[in-house]
Image 1 (cartoon, rainbow, N blue to C red):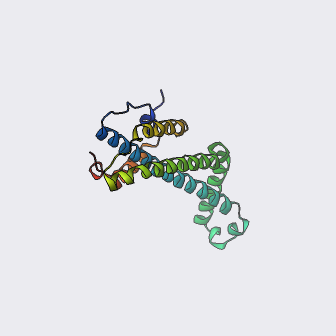
Image 2 (spheres, one colour):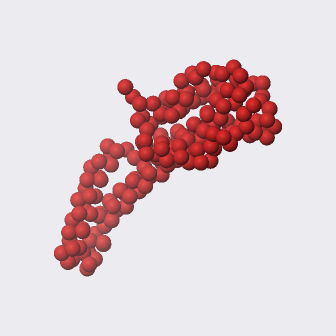
Image 3 (cartoon, helix red, strand yellow):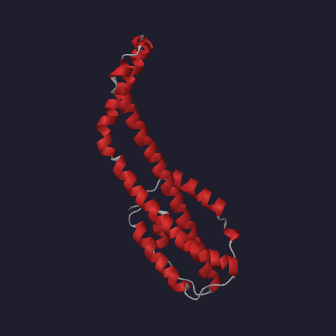
Length: 185
């Protein structure tokens, strides 16, 4: 059985509460989940991009005959370092097509973009509620619409999610939007 991401768990047709306080709390929960996923996918993109660039740099350096001819590589330590670097480059060249970092980056960027759009859509609902302390009459329908958007996006989520990145993203989200921060009727 596949483990669920935070968004998948939030998107599974949660029972829509009937009282206003519960509606607003559900909206705030969705707001935090969108923020968590936005942060999560930004960090995952950063990490995958770092690995991709690093492997490209190692390959470029190891493939350079100009660097190989440097005098400092002609001693024992230099030859060992060069052998390690060229061996690492060979391994990276062999596994790079399997890892498909460029494809992974595209998937992560797409999810990050979708969660960012969703975050700002929800923020457009949260901000007026915070300023006016009034709940729009369409909030119930809007929560249903948000749930459908989550379901669509979450179907493409990274499974299983990287737990350390989820934990880090959760801490950042709760640091920015702690549970007691928002007005509730």
